[in-house]
Image 1 (cartoon, one colour):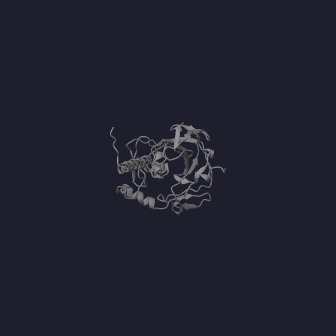
Image 2 (tube, one colour; image 1 turned 45 degrees about the vertical axis):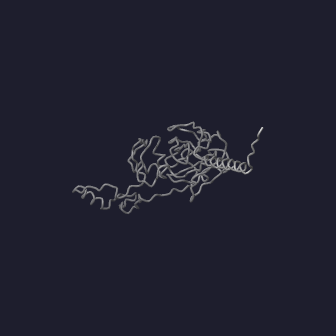
Image 3 (cartoon, one colour; image 1 turned 90 degrees about the vertical axis):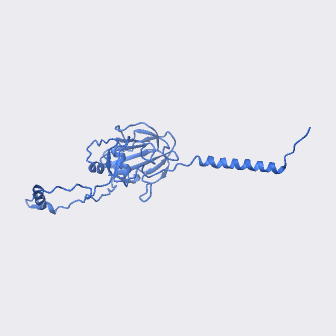
Amino acid sequence: MRRFHIPSILLLAFAGALTACSGQRTVETREAKPRIHEQSLPLRQPESPTRTVVHGDTLYSIAWESGRDYRELAKWNRISPPYTIKPGQALRVLPPTEKTQAPAKFNATSKAANKANAEPKYSTSKTGKAVASADKPKSNSKTRTVPSATSGKTVAGSWIWPADGQLLNRYSDSGSGKGLDIGGKRGQPIRAAAAGRIVYQGSGLRGYGQLIIIKHSDEFLSAYAHNDRIYVKEGDVVKRGQKIADMGNTGTDRVKLHFEIRRQGVPTDPLKFLPKR
């Protein structure tokens, strides 16, 4: 029986081709599973003067995303409590300027009113002395005051830690970290840090995953991000320490809780409010 011999050089070439293909498949497999990096940028650009409401939005979530106090947005858009908004509605997210304000119509009545307003008005003080209202300091509506975090209490009472676990990242004034990252295990309970009402529950804000926002008072809001299972819905009233979700990794690359506190729309260091541990 006749035997066929394959030259050694052909065997080496065939083995090299197999190695190259194997290496290429390995690279492609690695590239197919990129790491999920947490994004602090909003889903829609806050620099735009207006924002179109989409399904799932609330006034509180839009204000949070834009870095504004919800009461500012309500004032600029003439929205009264309970701050109901509808999909397709255009909301102003930047303060109106003099150019965008409608000019007042000129007539004899308005001219007389302007003259009357220009004259100082007087009121009688407790001592009986007339005081001109023009002497009173006027507030500048264009200046946004940053509240000081001197007190760690809200109307609901003292704050508690929303979850147990290792503190992974702290708040940063200059960086993108506007809260705390607390590590833990999937399914670990997430608790309300203070009593309040759920004003947002959803995943419409990029970088937060499944997010819960709680309103504690007119000044304080708190946020709980990257949740797995959620146990509350918008409108629910929750108690301090009540379980609101399970810890997860939605919108991020590891299991953790991202926790934020904002006072009058301004991010503040949660460690100034939470008890030491």
